[in-house]
Amino acid sequence: MERVAPLGSPAGDRQTDSGADRRRGRSKRGAEHGAKYHGARRREKRGMTEAGARILTLGELAATWGKLGTPRDRALFGLCFFAALRVGEAVALDLVDVVDGETIRDAIRVRRTVGRGETLRNRTKNGERRDVPIGADLSGILAALVEGFEPGELARPLLCSRSGGGRLTTRSAARALQRAFVAAGVQRASTHSLRKTWTVEASRNGVHVRLLRSILGHKSLRSTQHYLVEVADWEKRSAVEVVRFPMKPANGG
Image 1 (cartoon, rainbow, N blue to C red):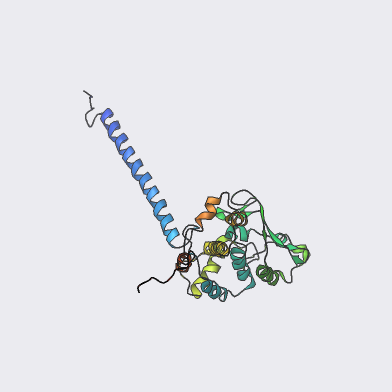
Image 2 (cartoon, rainbow, N blue to C red):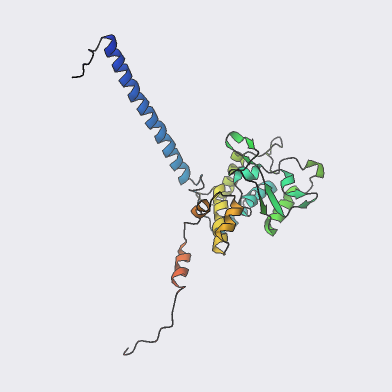
């Protein structure tokens, strides 16, 4: 039979303290896990994570665009939507990444990101640099932003803060877009919503998932496919009308 030291003795006190410490440790770890879980769930519900970001309608995109009051904020919107950049990649861009001499490049050089603590990292999220083609709409948006810049300023940030002219932070970028969403009456939207909406719309228009993966900068097709799991009602309606065959009228009424 196991002998238990009586309470009040040095050995008994050590056993009591050890048990209490273990219970406190388990309680603390449980509380930390719960806080992380519920915090992640709250962020997801608010659309602050890629998984929780809501797909926007084209009408909501147009309404939000109408509430963007500066070339900088319109460029931020354009980079996150038309180029499907992560907000950290957008604010990490320098002028030289989108401008070649005095003209807009054919493609954005995505080579860096701004991570936690607003730290500029010389790598993207997946560690690979990529070029994202610049379409006609985004080219016009960027041209309006860089108008008046001198060739000698190409090493400066593309998106600058209003105070001091330094690099725009991811937090300030998210706030700028969130103000436009709120003003447009668009709920549960975030910077991720723009990237995710572009991906879904491109897929609906026939762009192959392999090409989407390359533009988005995902390591695997599975990450890209996570963007495409949501289905709109009109897509289901169209799907059930795809397969048909000629039916003759039934005999006998």
